[in-house]
Image: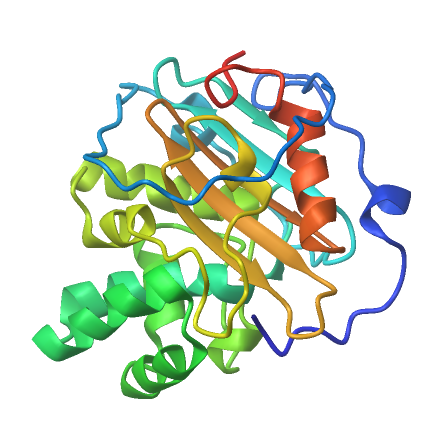
Length: 268
């Protein structure tokens, strides 16, 4: 949910970049769309495995900033092996949508009082824009501060409100990897585990990366006019984030075509 809904141009499937193979980015296979919708979330105790090394993140080179809102973007990390898969544009900045609420929430959990932290939990679970406004008013530099703290090179608020901030799927995955390393019981991740079936505005939270098997911790984002969608999910042994210039169905199809053939998320 964001005011970043003014982008016009090619649909994501008309402008999707090629995925490339190399030391840091591995070409992703395609698979048929898995039929059926995502079931209602069943929240249980959530635990992940953790790779000691993730070279694509730990040893990543600095990048030249580039803004790229109109194509599809995906980043996947296997927490067991450190294997990484990503689209060629995975580190380019694009509208954060409600994924920026993860950054706001982390700042609030570090600096806010008990009441504000409770609101941060609710904000992540229900993607509540009104709460995001309130917390951002209290902590107007929260996104930039978290971007600097966690070395998120494609993430910035650029002097704007949270709804105009930018990030990348790579940054979102890297951020959650660091949270898992710091504290597997991170309140941000626990709020993702307890995500509500419907968001505060009534949107069904059941699309994109959440359609992968084993996706237990989830956060979703969408533009107010439906032109942009994104999501990030954590499974027992993976983190994956994706974004498209298109509908929630477009996002789910994109994720499934890239990663859906794997029985446990996206094992390579």
